[in-house]
Image (cartoon, rainbow, N blue to C red; front, side, top):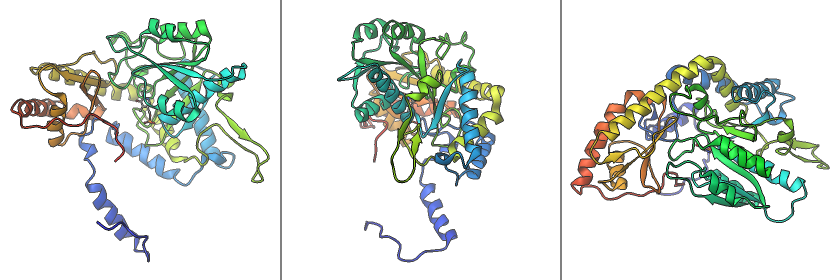
Length: 414
Ligand SMILES: *Cc1c(COP(=O)(O)O)cnc(C)c1O
C-alpha cells in the first residue's frame, strides 16, 4: 500500500467523519465486553456523563489554570475528594496524563528528596517484580536504578527480602494496591514499616485499584489497609481513566501533604517567554480528562461506585468459579479486586489464548507463571457464561492440536 500523502485539498467534514467511522468499525467491539484490557466500561449512563463533560472542556488548557478557573477548581476538588477517600485530608498533588506519568513524577519526587538531603551518586528504587513497568520506564528516564525483589509464592511483595535489599542509595520503596498481574494487594503496612525504618519514600501504586478497593468491604476479601492510613505512605497514584470511568488521559498523583508535592514541581526562571512553573511532565494539559473525572465522581458518589464495583467483583468471582470448574484450568491466586489470572496444568496457555482470540476476545498472556490475564469491568457481568463456554471450546481445540502456540506479550507497540 502506498503511504498516505498530505492531503492537497480539504474535503467536507461529513465525508471525513464517514471515513473515520469506517476505520473505527474495524476496532474491537469493546461495548460488547470482548476486551479484557485497555477499556474500563462502567455502564452507558456513566459513559454518557463522562463524554458530555469531556466534550464541554475539549478546548481548555490546564497549563493556564489562572485563565481556566474551572480547571483549577476541578483539580483542587479531585485532589481533596480523593485525598479524603484515601485517608489524607491534607493531600496535595495534581492530575496527570496517566498512571505512567504519575509514577514518573513519584520517582522524580523520591529522587529529588534523597538528593535534597545531600545524597550524591547513584539513586535506587526498590520494587516487587510485580510492580508496573512504568517504574522501569521512569527510572530509565530519570537515571535511577531499579532493584527488583522477587515476590513470595502468593504473588505479593516479600517484605523480608525487600528489607534486606535496602541500601544507602535507596530513595524509594513501592507497593501495589493491587498489582496488575494477579490483582492482589501487597502488604502495605509491613512495607510501610521498612520505609519508616530507613526513611524511604513509600509510593503505593493504586493506579488500577484506587477506585475499586475503597468500595469493597475489606472483610469480604481480606484487603489490608492499603492507603495513607499507613503512616509511612508518602504518595499514591490512582487512575480515573481506569475504574474511575473517566475518558482516557487522566491519573492522579497524590502526596500526603504540600511538602511532598513540592518535590514534584519544576520551575525555570529567566526564560524570555515568562516565568514557567509546572508540577507535571507535560506542558499544555488537556482540561477534558480531568473534567470528565470530576463529573463521573460527582455523578456516581460512593454509592454509585459501590454498585459498579460490586458488579465487577461479582463478575470476577463468577469467572474464577467458571474457569476453575473446567478440567485443566485453575486460578493460582484468589483475586482481591477485579483483576484475574488463570493458568492451566494441561494445556499450553498460549494456544488456549489463541483459541480465545479466534473467538473474538482481546486478552493477554503473562508470566511467569504463564497465565491469561483478565481485567474485569462491570459490563463483563453480561458475558461470563459466554467466556467460559468459549474457553472450554478453545481448550478442546488446543487438546486436538488445532491451535498453534501464540505469543506472550500483552502490550506491544505495533
Ligand atoms: C495501568 C497501570 C499503570 C500505568 O498506567 P497508564 O495509565 O497505562 O500509564 C501503573 N500501575 C498499574 C498497577 C496499572 O494497572
